Length: 86
Image (tube, rainbow, N blue to C red; front, top):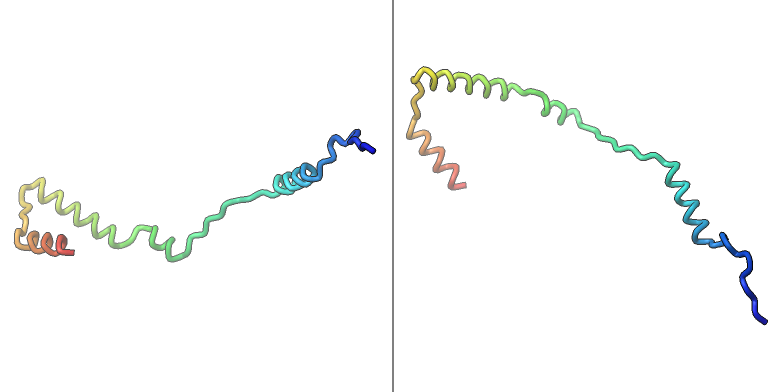
């Protein structure tokens, strides 16, 4: 006896399951969240170090423009040696 599949279109359990999963996934909405700790927020703000650094840069620019800037060669050499040894 030979049995033929007549009118079995659309009856594929894998496809049905696949469609159901797609519907479930499409109903979900994902959102990215970013949380920054208080410590990180404090660090991201302008610090007193930046203010001091800006003042130092301003003074150096003024000295260079006036021609009064002098390099301490001994201090420069010491710092270069210390830097390149590490």
